[in-house]
Length: 540
Image 1 (cartoon, rainbow, N blue to C red):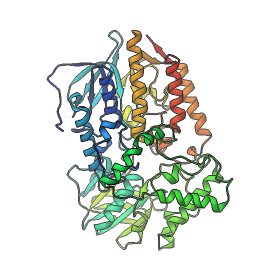
Image 2: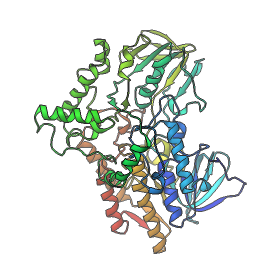
Image 3: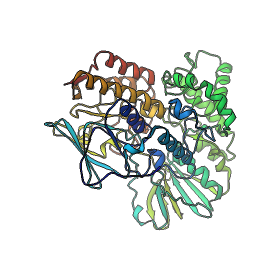
Image 4: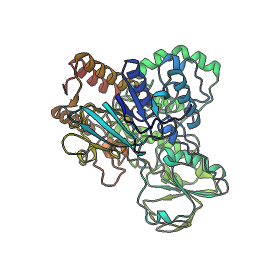
């Protein structure tokens, strides 16, 4: 694929401008072009893939299994073959190139175009969108597909700028790679990217120090190779699989048992847990019992099973208690579980150490390492696996001006407020996908890309057919939707953890459930609004 940029000093004028060339953005581009709209897509990267352009750190791979983690478009999947059940970042890049070849997308994409500012022109009824290189576009509709992980979070560590070794956030990794061989490596953070980097660094680092604040309740990936013949047999089931993923909690082909974990015998419960454990991936998270994320007593049965499984793999009982504590650090599953292959085993190696930063906090970064309360850890490489200002951060880092004298960042100072998780009042003709108060972080990406993308396409086709040119979320509908999310949160265990699901990983960020925790219920609400003439929107 050729990374091209259209910038001859003129203003690009289109029906729809999309920001972000990940799963949501390029699907939206595809369906809107098919529907006859003129569309351009801008992305800051020199290639498509969204997070899979930026995620190139050692061990980076997806945590959703295939064929769930791909488009359901037959002409795309029919001739595509994966090498693994959970593909790595470089294979995902090749997949996006295949998608581009089949759907002829890149002719409508402007790469190396970082959108920095946008404002709505009331008189013209169009968005003016500016890019970092001085370019400008005008569009009737402005659709943001920036994803939930578009703004890396780097803690304000004292002395960080003085470190003389290699220091990188996992989301800002050098595209030409970085070797850990023979180096003293420190990894701060034990979320998804931290787990993956730790596994790789443990192979050949002279010494690896893992700085853990909260134990990660990681699940077994159960990775396996995939050959062509196996996938040819699997493809007969793809249409049914893709239908099922639209009907399940997280957009997977995983069904849960609808009874309580407490209503079956311990033997039956543990047998089901073991079955889900062996299936791997997110099966143990979303394929067990209906009340795991609602009832603390039910949840504890899942945690205890997880803890006992993990502790069997850790030789040192002190480390076992830190990595898989007797008492849960938070309810199981209310932080997104990471998937691991040999993460817990690395702590049996003599070249790997663990620092519990709740007991031994990081005090400052030095030129040759970092200092905790107990002493200095000398490092050659410092890896910041410190996550993201998730869900809202990517949207608010663009200076978006609405019609009520506020930027989007100002409007959401006290928390995100949306309607259907796709629009917010005061910002007409602007929609966002995989964003706040939609399933986003609870949903498999390609599933949400297609469900929301088709809904938005139908919405814009409806407007065009009715002679209307403007949409805007109504204040009352927005308030009711936001209250609904808060009510749902109060019925779950999610508020009991300081997670990015709750915005709690970012200092000063308002605490609220940022994701709608059910794909089918969410889409029911969206379809109901559409059936009623897109109720909840002011259409003109």
